[in-house]
Length: 123
Image 1: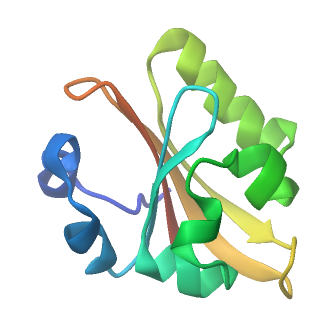
Image 2: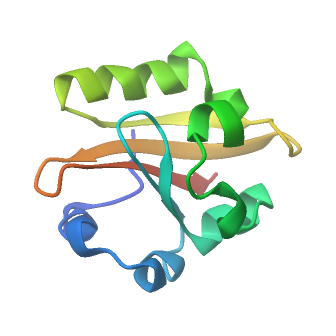
C-alpha cells in the first residue's frame, strides 16, 4: 500500500509550521494521543468543508470525522497509541458531512517528536 508521506517529509514533523502544512498537497491533521486536533491544514479544511478555527481542540474521531470512529480507523489509531508504533496506510471512504469521498489514509506516530498524525489524500 502506498503511503501519503515519505521519509523526507516525516523528518520535518517535529518542526512543521501551519504555513508549511497549508502548502502540502494532502491533508494533515496533528492530534494528541486521544485524538484532539492540534493542527488542521488547508487541504483538509477544504476537503471537509470545515474551517480550521472550528476544529482545533475538538476530537477528530468523535466530533469532526465521526465516520472514522470505528474499528478500521480509530481502532488502528488507538492500537498505535498503546504500542507507540504507528505507520499504516489504508483506503477509506469519508461519509460524514460530505458526499462519499474516497481517500488514502496514512496514520503515523513520529517517535522523534512524540507526535501523532493523520494524513489524507484524495484517491
